[in-house]
Image 1 (cartoon, rainbow, N blue to C red):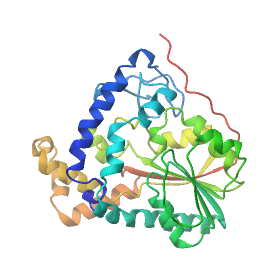
Image 2: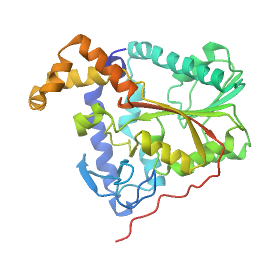
Image 3: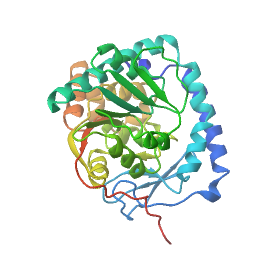
Image 4: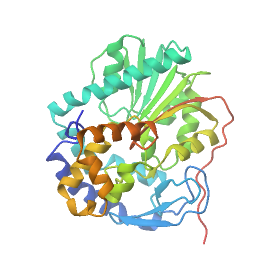
Length: 337
């Protein structure tokens, strides 16, 4: 898989233009923004980190979580996401050939889920996916034939036309009222978009069957690609309101009564993104002769990508957790003074 398979050329420029318009709209509500402690560990040692796209970022001095603050409240952010021109454009203009090239990514996720179930001794009948996007993972999982019913919680109406797939558009409240439970819950690239992760994790706990796995993925902010490219990294994005790392996502989950069974960074595109950025901005790498040596050598580049994966330094992070502890969550504390 190549970078262009994930981010289509040409589409990105218009997305960026609309994204800035979205941000400008959001900033008209700055009077309602709140300044908070760390969303992962709830620590209040959170010095200012930088300003990007007119938004202020803080970094936790304890667990290194990077997050937007002051920022919108949960309700304001949800309204913002629902009305986002950039997000609507992305859904409508994702090229058909790009959907095809992304298919192996979703097939790999389905294979990973099957492997997790086998290792945990789980025989899934009904699964739930939060934030299902266009339903690509559900389609890949359905094709395996291993799951009888797949439920998607997704605000946009989808018409996948596949038997055994149910789509809920009414949100967390409807899910809770339905009093349902699942053999596995998925949240691919979702938790970084949530202002109040504790509230989301509480819902996950409520719908998981005892011993059932919660499988999530999220960007790893403590990655070589993200730290090297800084605000030019695709991980630093206006709707990535909370960016975690292996230590902080573990802290967040454990504080909410989850036990981390597996944590890995299996990303494959870090080196390719660094090489692409260097080709466009060679001056940025002028003071980094060691990295230049690696990126210029095919064999070294392949070995470097493997090194990043094996040492939790790739920019894509995946976690498997089981809810077998007490929920200790709460809304993120506000900063005072």
